[in-house]
Length: 263
Image 1 (cartoon, one colour):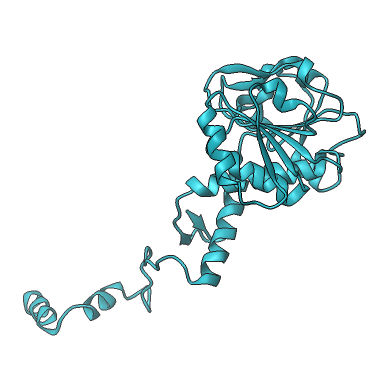
Image 2 (image 1 turned 120 degrees about the vertical axis):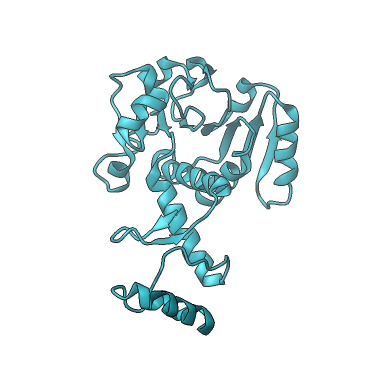
């Protein structure tokens, strides 16, 4: 639910199944624009499930990624990704057989796997100097994707440190130094200090992203006259005269019967 911050008055009810995919991809691309090397053109996409198309499109639109090297343990998921994005100009989806093959030549790596366990999707030998890692799949306690040694040698940016300490990749390294993303966006901290630095966006999803997505959706719906208006809150002409307002909505016969009963 989107509500006015000042009063709590509800403005919109919306399902966020698609909204979550959109805001996750948008946040990933925004972080990469601040952290990845400017010349990044090839992306490895590990995990080709529900988020995959949105990630590929966001990185193509925001960073100009031209090639996505896609890997999933389910080959049909990768085939679906390639089919769905076949008509996108200047974006090539390249199915590969292994994680190593996906990372070959990649400037950016997005890990978006679904297994709810501690996993090691990437190991230190796969990560080259200058890579930007967009770690999206680790989003709950007990679920990770990166080997901890990768974290030890990288610059790590998070959305909100207290939450990421519990849910993100850094749950493996309680003392890992991190920067919050707002500090990068405001210019208080760099997203990248050198071309050969390994950077990680340890993303778990954050309520402010949902709020931003809902605000965008609300504005878009109003401008296009989409959705359906529903009165969720009573709006009487005079809040002090609720009884009179109620009686105005009754039929004359019902009102007369009510008056007779009171007499």
